[in-house]
Image (cartoon, rainbow over all chains, first blue to last red; front, side):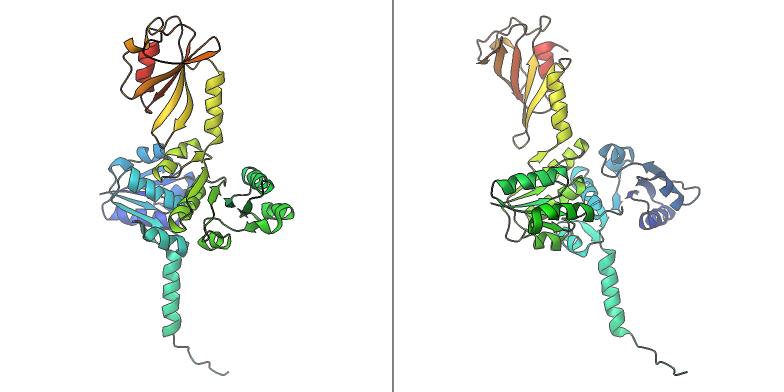
Length: 141
Length: 220
């Protein structure tokens, strides 16, 4: 299985490392060359410096025969565009985009895109946690 | 007419000012604080501060009315694409116009069905092509919706088509000659029109047929 990860920040790099460990062939794209240091020292996958919206870069990265693409740059709109390009132009079945804004996440999730919204997950978790939470008694001292 | 403009840089601010002068109800959205403050001095309540790709910002600007037209004129192509998608598909805005900053992103706008678009770089390049005679085939107009384009071809002495009648040319499928400009006078190209060296010929064709047309008219 071949995966393309766009954006090599905390999220992108960790997913890249995990997929690679599980035997995936992983290519990572980031605008910043220094992002390579987030991957392990002898990263066996490919790493390309470039913008994920640049179709030449995507082609170089092998998008045409990728099985999955993860759009995890720090820009929601960049991820939205990359996701749609991967889906509609290159016909990739499994496209996952990370969006921080819950409102845009909800809209694009309804339009056939697999969206992961960390903000929404945090809201839900915090909501549950605050309801379940047992406040420890204050010990007078 | 109610117009919402996203992006208050030079382009957005000038378009906003022009529309307001024509008496159109206009709302301008600008994200950057420094720019917003300058714009507010001039446009007062007609400019709002915020990220125009956020739904609540769009709604505050009246996207739910919806506006007659939304202009996405920011300096970020991805933002302009998302603004247009949200306007059309979420709020039912019928008309959008998007600014393309990097011509390499044009295909993405097309893919998302965002039209019309305007790209300063592409327009300048078209003018350069037109002004610099070393280009033998000049793109004059792209009819993106129709998937057609209009080009101009300069016939010279060595062109195989010089001295031939239009009906005798083996034009590629999906290409037609429109007119011939000779010594400052234009004529509609018909079957019996004979091409001459020095003619400027207008042709309409499907994009991608340029090389075939060039071969028939110019053999290059």
